[in-house]
Each structure stands twice: as structure tokens, then as C-alpha cells.
Image (tube, rainbow, N blue to C red):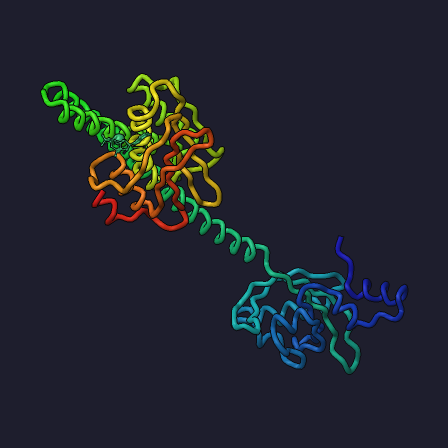
Length: 368
Ligand SMILES: Nc1ncnc2c1ncn2[C@@H]1O[C@H](COP(=O)(O)OP(=O)(O)OP(=O)(O)O)[C@@H](O)[C@H]1O
Ligand SMILES: [Mg+2]
């Protein structure tokens, strides 16, 4: 039920006598003005001043669009003659120059007397359809954006699947190629008569095997950032000693959770291969072989220890010999290699390097 604004204000003023018409006007959240029947603005609240700029003393029709100005005048006159609040709509230009359609409610607050025009309180709130059309525009824009994102995501997912398939295929081919090389070297080794040539070919076969094992570990789905040190030490050492029938003599110790970066895995596999083969070939027949792969603060210590009495280590003249290769790879990793006395008195070959010193030295890699 609609009640007269005039009646409302009167009721309030009787119960709260200190409230003035201006205070009541200011309490209204929507842009509101008191105007006479010529639409001249007599009072305006802060919301109205903010929305339309200084308008007191000006005609509100001056803010309306041409067809609305006449309609506004008529509407205000109708409000001044009505005891109830009348709804209406009007398009008004704001202080920022944009036109907005308002839904308004006009009600008489002071009736006309002999020498003064009636006063009308006009409250303006943004028309629902305007707000809804702005919302609908936003929803439409968001929908377009969403559809575009879905399309891009689908394309990316497809490209990713293609790359995964390609990568798997590539790893598979590399693995097969290494296996083929190992097979070819093995066939030649079996056919040559010279024991020296056989030993060299056996070495090459072992080295290819180590590279193949590292490659396989590197290219498992879960090893994008590197290879788990424990798994690396156990699987690689176990595989190398297995081919010498010595896997039962192995014990491994590695730092839990340590990760061997991808670019370090292959040189490290080759180093482990040489040191383990040396431990089998030159160490005591049935002694233990202990592999350590420890890591702290980016520093790695890789050791292979056997129960033998040790040997005098000098930098090998031949780069292709086992320890020659180890020294070359140690330089490539910007690390150091040493032969020390083990805790149990055996031979301890140790490689130390840091992964915080950058990627392995490529030039050294090419020389090794
Ligand atoms: N764990 C070890 N215990 C005792 N002596 C060792 C050990 N590792 C290496 N050596 C000595 O160091 C020498 C050089 O080793 P290196 O691996 O360079 O050559 P190799 O094992 O003789 O031949 P290859 O080139 O096939 O490896 C060996 O011949 C051996 O005398
Ligand atoms: Mg050797």
C-alpha cells in the first residue's frame, strides 16, 4: 500500500521533532530532490549532488533528454496534485555526461498555497532494466570469455597429449637404439680373437648399458625434475653388478629424498659404472662393495668402496681408460675425484660435486 510522502514526513516530525526536511532528505540513499512544479530544484541530497553535480536552483528538465523533459514536467505536476506517491521513469544526464534511465517516485511534501508553488519530493533509483541489461551484458561477455578459454584449454590439452605420445615414442626409440648398439658390440666381441679387443668391447658394452639404464630412469613419467637418488643408486648399481654376477655383494646408502638433476644423471651413471667395474675387477673377490650417494645443501658425494688394500691413484694418461673417463666426467660436473682410505680400511673412490655451480661443462663433455 502506498502512503503519502507528506504524511510520512509529518508523522516523523511529530515523533522526532528535531528532524528537519533536509535531514530526512539526506537519509535517503538514492539521489533525491525537492522541487517545485516548474521542476526547479529547491533541495538536493548528497547522492543527487554526487550523481548530477550542482543542481539546486536549476530546472531538473535541463538534465533530462528532449522527449523526457516535457514528460517530467507533466509528471511532477501530477505528483503535486496527488496525495500518494507516483511512480515514473526519466532519463537524466549525470555529472559524468552519461545518460541513465531512472525509475522515480514523486510525492507531494508541501501543498501549494496562495503565493508559493507546491513542493514535490522526487527519489530516483537506477531503473531495474538498466541494471539488468548491464548485468546481462557482463554475463554475455563472461560467457564468450569462458567459451574461448575452454576452446584454448582443449587445444592445449590436445597439444600436450600429442607431445607426450611423441616423447614416449622418442624415448622408446632411443632405448631401442642403445639396445641395438649393445647387441652389435656384443656380437663383435664374441667374434674377435684378440683378448685386448674383447676387453675394450666389453667396456664399451658396459658403458652403453649404464647410459641406457640412466636414460630409462630419466624418462619415466614421474622423473621430470630429476631422478630419486636412492632409486638411482640401487637400480643402477644393482644392474651393473648383476652383469658381473656380483649383485649379492652390494650395499647402497643414499640420502632420502635427494634428487639427481637430469643433466647430471648420465655422467653419474657412467662414473658409477667405471668405479663398480673396477671394484669387481681389481678389488677382493668376495668382499663387499658399498655405494654411497649423499647429498646436503646441493653438494653431492658419490662413493664406491671395496674391501681391497687400495692403490696409488695418479691422473691417468689415457682418457679412454676407466679412471680417465671418470676424471673427465668429474671435470664435466665441475667436481673432484679422489681415492681415499675407506672407514673399514678398504679402497674408497669418491666424487664430489655441487649442483648449485650450474649445468655441467659442455666443452668438457665433448672432450670426455
Ligand atoms: N678398486 C680398485 N682397487 C684396486 N685397484 C684399482 C681399483 N680401481 C682401479 N684400480 C687400479 O687403477 C688402474 C686404473 O684403473 P682404470 O679403471 O683406469 O683401468 P682398468 O680398470 O685397468 O681398465 P679399464 O680401462 O678397462 O677400466 C687399474 O688397472 C687398477 O690397477
Ligand atoms: Mg676400470
